[in-house]
Each structure stands twice: as C-alpha cells, then as structure tokens.
Length: 331
Length: 293
Image (cartoon, each protein chain N blue to C red):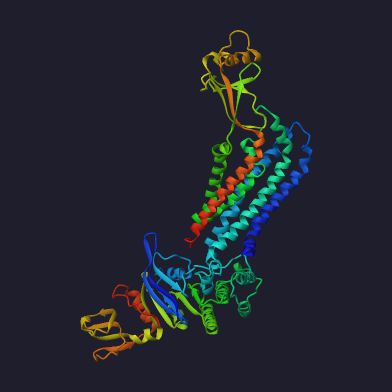
C-alpha cells in the first residue's frame, strides 16, 4: 500500500520539493551576506518573499496534496477497485494520510529551517528594538513563519484537505473550501488562541518625561494613548494607561488633550517643542496614572513554538479521527 | 453452501428507496445473472454485497460474513464495479503489482498469463486502454485475487458486441477453471443467457423473480384462446400478464403443472420474453420469490 501511495503521490510531492530546492539555493547564496549587517532595507524583497513562501506552502499542501489524494479516487471510481483488494478502508486511509502528513511535515520543516536560518540576522536585530519599527520574532506574522509552527501548519493543512475531500467529494469545491478554511484558521489562531498558550506577563511603567516617547490618537485628534518603550523581542498584547483607581482610560483625560495640536486647528502661539509635548503628557504620571503593558516575553519563543506545533498536531489528529468515522459510510 | 443470503434488504438514498425488501439466497457454484431496467437496484444490491454500501434495512451475509467487515472477508469477495475503473496513470504491470501486494491469495501466474493471452503490453498505461481492454484488466484483477464469489456490475455495458462475447467466454473459462461463484448484472438478457444458469429479475427496486434459467423457461407459458375471465384459471397458474381483445385472451402464466385445458393454444417462451414480461408488468401480481438452489 505504501508503494501504491507513493506511486500516486510522487508527482505532486516531487514538484513541490523541486520548488523548495530552488528556494533553498537562493537563500543559501544570499544568506551569508546578511550576517553582520545593521540595515536590511535592501533585503525587503527577499524578506517579504520568504514570508510569502512560508504561508503559501501550507496552502499548496492542503489544496494540491490533501484534497486530490481522496477526491481523485472518488471521482474516477478507483476507490471501488482499491477497496475490493484485500485491504480495509482504514488501512488504506491510514497509509495514505500517514505518508502525506509525513512528507508535508518534512517539506515544511526543511523550508522553515532554511528561512529561519536565512532571516536570523534580521530577526536578531528586530529582537533588540523597543519601538515598533521592525517585526520581531514573536510578532504574529514572523512567529508563524519560523521554527516549528510551520510543520504543524503543514500537517494540519494536509489533513484539512483530506477531510474536505471526504466530506465534499468534489475536487474543485473541496480545494476552495480547504483554502478558505485554512486561511481562516491561520488568521484566527494568532489572535484568538496563541496569546493564551502561556499566561502573559504584565509590566507597569511609571509615566515621566523620560519614559513617554509619544502619543497616538484617532483621526479627529483625540489622544487615545501614549507610546512608551516596549520590552525588546516581546509580543505586546495590550499597552494601556491606567488611572489611579486601576481602571483603563481611553481616550486620555482632558488635562492632557491639549498637549498635541489637533489636525486642522489654527496654531496659536509658538510651535510646540517635542520636549514640551512629553512633559505635558508626563502630567499623567504626576496625577498617579501609569502605563501597563501585557506581553509575551521574547525568551518564550521556543516554548510557544512547541505549543503551537502541538496545538496544530492535535487539530490534525481530531480531523483524522473524524475522517476515520466518516470512512465507513463513504461509497 | 450459500454464498449470498439477504433478508429484508433495503437501501434508501435521501428520500428514494433504491432497493426494498430484498430477500435472496444464492448457492455456491453458480453463475447468477441480475437483470432489470436501469435504476432497478442492481448496482445497489451488488454494492451492498461487496461492502461498498451499507444497507438501510435488513441483513446480508456473503460467504459467511458481513460484507467489507475485514481482510478475511475482503479476500473472499471480488468486485468489478460498473465502468470497470482502473488507475489511468498506472501501467498494466503496476496494476498486477498492486494486486500482488494487496491480496494474500493473488495468483500472479494466472494474471500474467491472462494479460499475455489478451495481447496486452504490460508496460502500457491503463489510461490508454480501450473500454474492452480496461474491462479485461479489471476482470483479470478480480479473478487473480482468487475470490470465492466474484461480483460484476454491468461488466460488458461499455463493450462492442465482439468484445462482449470475448469477455463473457473468458469469464466462463475462468469460472470453469477455478470453480468460483459469480453474480453479474446486465440490462440485456441476451448477455446473461449465454453465461448464467440462474437469473434474478429486479424491477422497481424489488426482486420480481429469482430462479434457475431452465426452470424459468419451462414453467412459463403463453396461452392464447377465446376470451375468458382470468378468475376461471386453475389456482396453480400464476398470471404474469394478460391481454384481451374482443374475442381473444392472451395470458402469460407461471405454473409447474402441465397445461391441460384444450381451449388454450400453448406457446413456449424464450428467456427474453419471460424477463420482458416481468419487467413491463411490474404491478400485476405479487412478487414471486423463490430460493435459488
């Protein structure tokens, strides 16, 4: 059965691996140049490219490996040929999905290894920064494109494709549904699930002329919050101003609303100096307000990666179990 | 020995019954034809027998076990589905290899010999085979598996008359050689008459008659005589169909007793006549169910 599975699977599998090989060569040539650089603005194209590839791979695996593995048999009727050999449907399915998931995980693992290695100088620089200038390795788009998480996505995408194939039985329809569902899950997990994998840390920062770096407001000029230095390499989940009673305030109280000129408002008096704005906002600290940051610290990168991998493998196992249940009623 | 025993078997798709209250018994060592118009439930019955489908009602036992229940059961039953599916991107050789890998009783010599005799190139991709060659490949896989019971769903439907004849005589040879039981379906009686010794007529998802073919021909008569009321017929004559003109009555009856009434002129029927009468008069009488021996 393994022989037959590979015989049917080798063309799609080898095409993807050929693509990965090309990407690997490009990264191997350009990667060593990045070491020691401090300005990566020239690498924007490649950097964006690696991110894109990391997200395209699970989609390709789900749509072009997972879906046809079952629907092609159902559509051409060959399932009735294979199910009438001396092999149970369960073994047939287990072999197919086992081989597919394994190859998918290897493909994603290799690509993730190459991309994580290639972008390590860029990530290292980003991890030292305390403003929001670069995406550090815990920021959602980067986190999902590094380390172990992509291996989980690949396994999940494959099983998702297989499941859609079994439920919908038509290749094109199942491909569309797989793609939509995969995008939905990959978008939802970073915001709805990942922040809670580990209890986030809290940091309270006194508001003073030194700690305030700026302010942000809505488009009518109402100041909603202040900007302070963020923990380097961390993933900030919430950055809030707290009043003396411990309540979150947004927008900020009236006495600081005049600290920055509103857009379109005729300027009176001398132009505000940057230092003036900061000391104006620092009144918050004098009145007992402070800033509270809720975040995942950078050193949790690998624990969070392992949890994310386990989470997606568990989702895959759940879908596989569902498929086994459906299999008996399939015809 | 019984190779197939169905009791009250039924299959419902959404709101439509494809097979209802099917009770059957098929003994080993026979070639049984399953005939009926399109959509009568032939494929459904075969699919249930092979374990491809689960019945909605009733029970079925094939070669002593529940269809599709496990490897031992799968080894005992061979099934060639309608349209004889094969893997288009695999060669003939690959198919035989697949069969050898997946079947403990696989007869590799038989498979190779058959492919050779059919004049097929083992390297050829199955996608490039003609309909007849594809059916032959599927049949080869079915036979080389060495099942106790081989189920064939409309195996010759896509074949031209010559290929049809070759396929069926080939099948007969394999049956004679290996002593396996066969159930094959067709909507053409002629195909079945040549190879089968038993016949099941399926109409409107119900078994109308199941009988030995010779017996079927011997017990059905067309009686023509002066117009009369059908109630006056002897009780051992079951009316299958009747036609009346002003002066004449033509009636098709099934009876095991000889026709004694001198008023009738009795005509023998061909198998096709009998089957067509059953197919075209689905509601005239209650189903004549019999056990096949």
